[in-house]
Length: 130
Image 1: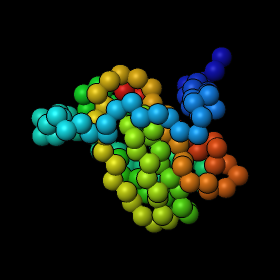
Image 2: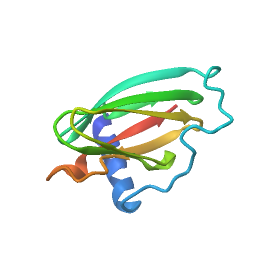
Image 3: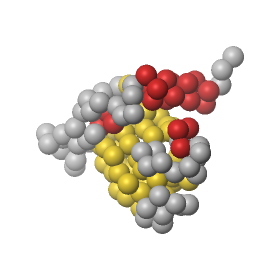
Image 4: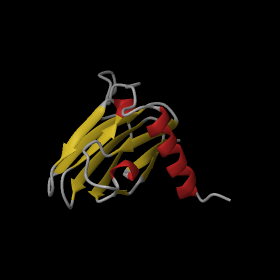
């Protein structure tokens, strides 16, 4: 029986290999009609560290504005959440703020978009909108 982490890795890896190098943008990160003051907001701190995102699974409820603060701790990395048109370069020691509106339930993969070494292709995670 596969563990939850195994299932998530399988989904993320499959999306990467079968979806090509990037995922097509499906949504605007924060649509202009979203009232940022009226929707629930969740803030998550994330680190990008060779070869993991911590946390590598982010769960939010549909209709939530998600604010990610992502810090690269050991070199240059990238954060690509293609379904939302997000692709940020993360320099070592730098924290980037990324906002997105989780407007539709689904499983959306994110990955490192800057080649960071031998484990680069396994540096990915999942946004679960429930």
